[in-house]
Image (cartoon, rainbow, N blue to C red; front, side, top):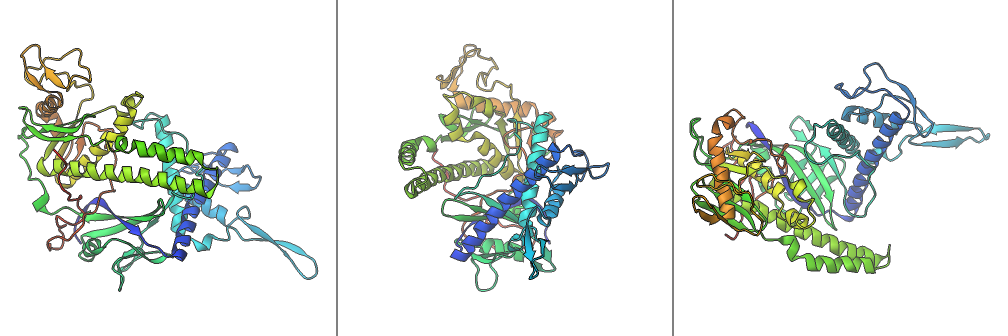
Length: 510
């Protein structure tokens, strides 16, 4: 078995039958029901004054279970569930209790008795769906507590709320359990290479070819961890998360000496020009104009939104109009993601050392005149893609200090301008007379900042990590794109350049 060092995802479009689609909808509803019921149990226990210890490993009560009474009046011998494990246990106890289901049995003599049935439909759905929904609520509670205590970066996280039932949307997650050489989640078995087998759901057809993922699993270069099924606009998608081996050495960047401080390329993100990459001497490495995908489709979006508002509420015509509007939003989102993958691929393939600026995106979007353009540019998503792709290729990513004035500083003499408006697209230094493109000047300053702060970078961790606390690219990344086509044969323990890599597409317009 090869050493697995990264997480990646393979996303396929499902092609279920009518019966399978009903079963998938049932699973989505079960996940939503479990999430809401776990939240209700949690709130009832807190209202009743149950004791809990949020710092314990199990998330339960270290002093023993507290005898509490829920809002519905039934007794519940449990502590306030906070962690994912305590929430799973609380729901398992509830789904077998009288509160979850009961029925009255009347004998021939007229004697009546109560039979506790629990949740009668719990056998129709895999137990993993219930467990993973409780895990999601546990993560939401942890994020809320971390936000209240100031340990969470970014916008404040609110308390978890009950999920609503919609005709579209929703998802459920299932873990892969292996029994010997047989896994509960299998891809392309038997005579159906374009299929995915899930527990209790059986084999479901997929639209795309699964040959690359099957080859990686067969040779020991990948191991399935979990699968997430999502209901979209008249479409079903499945994302299979795997632990994969490192990329082939041929596509990785060569290691640099510890004393080497050169080779940094600054990446300046903007609205007029999405990306400008340049070296310290002002050499331009890449320039990509902002496509403004949302703005180009805004006229159609407004027309579709007006069509929704003109239809009778709750009618079939309004539902169809909502579907058309949702498909438009999905098309805009997919187009943006495709373009960002192109840009990030070109950056990480040609440069092993990249410098990003730490942008306060949340603060910038509070400006109502810039919010739509900043959201359309997706600066945070671009930084996230660059970070994990550079890590896969054994490269380095550094985040410059937020208060470093990269745009106002002259890349030649270091003079800082006091006033520089967004209209000034050319930087003119009043001290040394340098005239340079504004974005290229900022990219050169970012590259110079990294070279000057290399000793601090060397103490910050290994290669491939984002140093400096990038708020837009924090956390583990498991959703990467799958490439089409086949690649060269490789040895066991190596992932070929075409296996589980980032998309290979034509280079964006420069």
